[in-house]
Length: 309
Image (cartoon, rainbow, N blue to C red; front, side, top):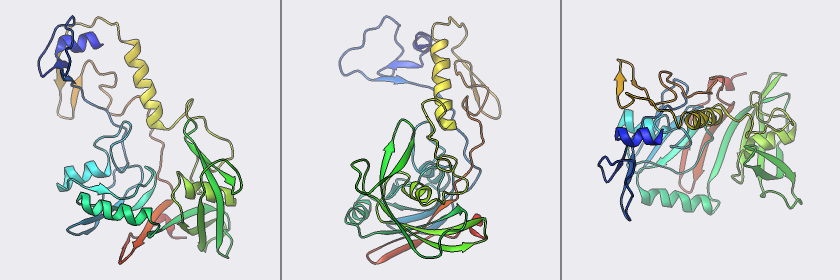
């Protein structure tokens, strides 16, 4: 596949086609031209909540990552804001997991982003989320102090007792807002900011987020075997590239276009729009960022529809 790409001019050196036998010299630039198949995201707009000279706030839809990562490039909040609203550059001052929705604050210049960063690092910023959890959550305020230990191989965190040598110190305050006997809506106020902290602490309390398949069970999921849809897509796509590497495919140096999208005969995903291995079954978590506040400022986001019991 690489040999074909060189012959077709998909791989160039200093902007020019070269033969397969060409030896790259020091400081030369190698470019590889290809198109990408991104995993689809939910067909939701990115509503702009507030637009100020230095700050932009939006309501991030679930399933859309904040910025380019993994297989995602255009289907991101940053990419959508640039493509649909001409807003660039923007600097997200905090992160939300891809499946989490809600308030996302972005600075519109580097100096404002640095100001936010300093306030967050100094512990001056308070965060509020809401979650829809399993069962009747306790009426009284509940504070969970349990270390968070993130396992990158499994793609999930575990809660450890505070005196444990494992994990990083973490604390979250929970307050029940409403309950219908089956589910509860809970206000979540993380004091620290660890990976999956709210999700893990809710599981630790015995009331996991009601549609959080990663934490609703105590059984760990080995992402190296199963993984998320996007992870599986990446592995299958890479396997296809490896298996096709030595194919001698003539007439591969062209793209056939139709009115929907460009068909590339060298691509292992075409003519399908979604990457291979994407099952399309993912849904947004019932976890929503509601409010961020710091010295002299507060930004909020409306409640999601699922928060009404």
